[in-house]
Image 1 (spheres, rainbow, N blue to C red):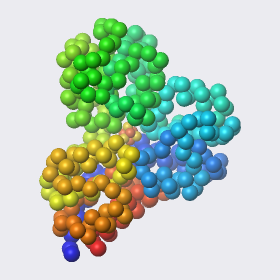
Image 2: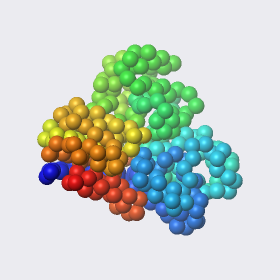
Image 3: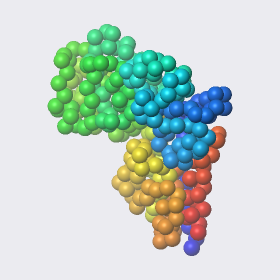
Image 4: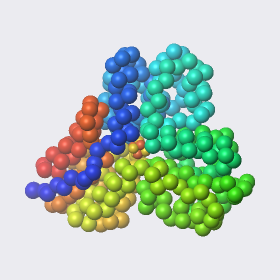
Length: 289
Ligand code: SF4
C-alpha cells in the first residue's frame, strides 16, 4: 500500500532540551560514568535509554545520589530547596535548566523582593512548576484552570503578578490568563516572551497539518505533556490521532489510511537527538511497509 507521509515543520528538539542533553553528554565525556541526572532530561524514552546505556543515572530524590557524585539538573529547573540540598550534600552540580525557565525564576525572585505575590498558571506536579513555585517559600499560588482562578485567595491584590509555565502555548494559557485578569484587573500581566516559542510553533504546525491528513503520528513519550497536547490538538483539528512509540505505530500502519502526517516532537542534532531521529525515521519506514 502506498502512503503519502507529510513531515510537520518545525519539528525536533527545542534549544533548551538540546542544550540539556549536550550538558549530560559533556559531563559523561569529562568525568565518566556514572553521572546522576535529576528527573528525566527530556521526556523521550529513546534519548533517556541511550544516555542510561552510556552511564547516566536518572533519579528523583537527591538521597539516591552518593556523596561527591556529579549531578545534572534537567531543563525543567529546580526549586531553591533542591539547590540548597545539592550544595549541602556536596555534589558537583551542572545546571541544565533552560535559560527561558531561568529567566522566569529571576523575574519571580526580583518581583518578590518588591513585595509581589504571584498567580502561576501551570500543571500541578509538573517539574517546571515545582521548580518555579519553589523559588519562593510563600506567596505563589498555582491555578490550573478557570475554576481555580475563582478560588485562589492571595493575601493582597495591590502587588500581584502572573507567571506562566513556559511550556503552555499562548493558546493554552489565553483562557486562564483572561480569567485571572478579569478577577484581578490590576495584576501585572504575564510577559508574552515567557511562553516558549518552541511549544507554540509545534502546536501551530499540528493545527495546520491535521485537516490535511487521515492520521497524525506524534513521536513522543506518554509522560510528555507537550506530546500529549499535540495529540489532543491533532484530534481537535481533524486528524485521527495516534501517539505511540515506533513499534506501536507499526501495527497502526498495517491498517492505516493512505495519507498521514508525521509530527515528530523529537528529532534533532547530536548523539542524543540521533536516537530521536530513529523514532522519526522508524515511523516513516513503518508507514511505508
Ligand atoms: S522552555 Fe521551551 S525551549 Fe526551554 S526546555 Fe522547555 S520546551 Fe524547550
